[in-house]
Amino acid sequence: MFIRNERSLKEFMANYPVVSGIIIIHIAIWLLSDALSIPLFERLYDLGVGHHYMIHQGEYWRFITPIFLHGGLMHMLFNSFSLVLFGPALERMIGKSMFLIAYLGAGVLANITTFFINPSFMFPHVGASGAIFGLFGIYIFMVVFRKSLIDSQNAQIVTVIFLIGLIMTFIRPGINQYAHILGFAAGFLIAPLVLVRAKPFYASQYRRTHHDDGEIRFNPNRWKRKRFSRKMKQNPLWIIIIVLAIIGLLSYLI
Image: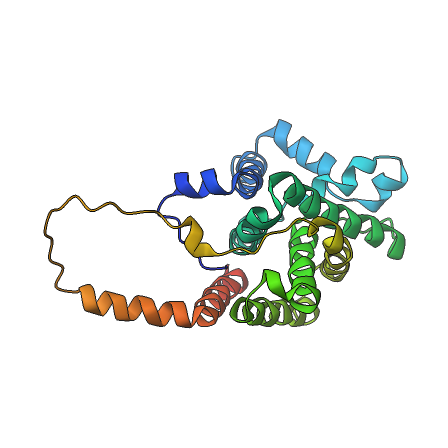
């Protein structure tokens, strides 16, 4: 479920258009407002920050716009990577429209609840963390109540990574703890609604089909590659933990 089988970016975008579209928005906003520092887009970025003082003034769109904004390159990359990891399977399971509703719904509910729990005027926030933790909430709901939608191996993976993310929420400085906790709660609460017509996800169903052209080919490393591939498939948890650890380390160093 959480190991990608697509052979190209084009194939990924065709299979998961909503996830791809959100990531494109992440990159475009960061590029225009941060990397290139175009004044117009810097101003638009400021208008999108979830600043509680401005929400008190009636700018309620700030409950939505922070979901697409990030505080720097590593913040954007980490959230986008998390979406690539956890979004595609759910998009396939519940459909494009329902996935978008689930993602934005969890993020917006997290931001609204944060506003009422911590109404401080000096509390600006950005990031997709609330929406992404909302996906965790939906997956954990599956683990607990809809076991037919997720196999035991993937249930273990998502549970362990959620626990790691939860721990990091409280030990890492500068994290919006409200967004993480409330995003997860929102996802868990809306899960019964978005999973009504959900279908189990089997990654093998969406692998590319190969056609034999009759030509004989010899690869001297074929057995080594197969053994390596088999081991990696049997231990996807370590792949995910290693990648997350590397990205987390880079976020501390840069």
